[in-house]
Length: 456
Ligand code: AMP
Image (cartoon, rainbow, N blue to C red; front, side, top):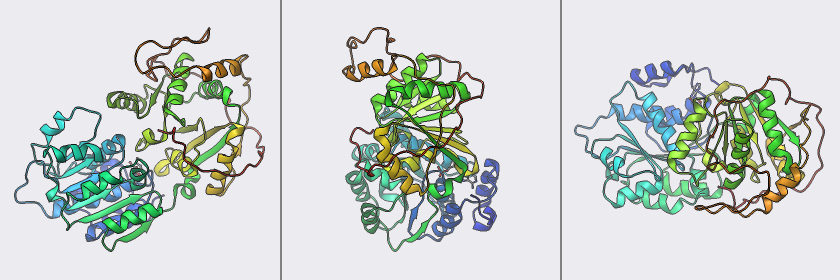
């Protein structure tokens, strides 16, 4: 993934090069090699790059450099010079963490703000000068309305993961933020895809931008071993539990299509003695942060997430990703498996595929331009009654948000607090089994890629 140009050749300040050396990076990634010189020049930039390519350093490093080069004589409280907008709280937190990491030998001050948490500490922080503000659009607008933030001094704007911001319906919020910024500024737009909507947004925001594009994750992901197991939906939970235990996986990110499905899967895994937690948009920010840090620290072996909640989860050397259900948008598969095999390390991506998902599988294989290895799991037989209890659960009405849960089929365990890690102890197992068997082609069905409104 690394190119031949050394960081030192890019013209970055010595304090930044020192911080880079301390992170252990040896050379810029392709997106960094292209983006850093463009941003240093001061022009606008339209960049096609996905998470996992090193894009965050691609914009934070040259931004830090530019701010260092032109220090203000007098910084004002709550008046940032650079605004970075991100779609999710997790991504905002991680981008700001990167700013701190790369800027640690500089006097540049940064701050992160997002919704779902008490606004008062943010108001307190805005009473001091801040150079780089990383924010999600909604909370930023709350502050703007309360006049606790002053956006009239923004010199550089970054729209990070702009495609996701549009997917999540932030276009009006983005336009409202744009209206609060000075006309003269540098604009950087990062997006995994260049849809018509992104092009339109780019036309409105960017002035004569340089365009750069790095290999999509699906062409750059040779480091990710992709495989799939054909199974019944009703058997997936037991099968996954078996694979994790038998393979001794200690850090696995599992994607489900719905929030409800994420909760139920995490509960099942906990019941089976694994440490698991769910993360999705219905969780409080505190619960999401707790689950994520438990996962990063290795206290939680299995993190079950929906696509949107997983945006921005950045874990170095995450070894395993599982698609509990295939996404119905093929690009999401590429995003998901891009969580592993990042920045040069190896990873595995396993999909559990029910026959009703073959149409999604076909669309994914068309996009990635290769078949995914079919494997079988040796030594696993579906437990008796799994299909019946699955069907009974599917009939069960959704539990109300508050109050007591409705009756449940006999023999089913009490629902734990949704998706919270309950027991500690990590994945058990021998490191055996759960590994590839014979490839076998599946049937073909027409590809479909409509978005499912139940996704979160
Ligand atoms: P990003 O695409 O910004 O989410 O970054 C993906 C991962 O790549 C992060 O874990 C970074 O720490 C890592 N990374 C960024 N730049 C480099 C580099 N030049 N060499 C090695 N790893 C890097």
